[in-house]
Length: 117
Image (cartoon, rainbow, N blue to C red):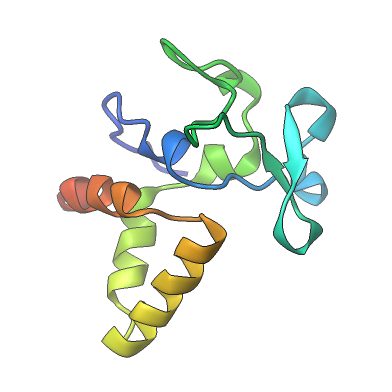
């Protein structure tokens, strides 16, 4: 895993759905979670969409964050997304928007950092 230059950015904590993966070591009892689409487990969100584990000074569960949080690199996701043919990219984005998986705010944050990849 590479170090992601977030520099205080919390877009993925504010504008995306974070899945839990017990089969990859996540222990749901450590987090506040909810059952989401297709009966998956996701970190619970506040009414404004922010992860309940995001505090004033960043992630409050950082030392034992779920695997998706530890491994997510918005730059890589953005690079892969932009490599898709344009018509397919639009379909993927509509589905991501429908499931609240990856918002425009996260794409914008990734676009601003893509040069550091």
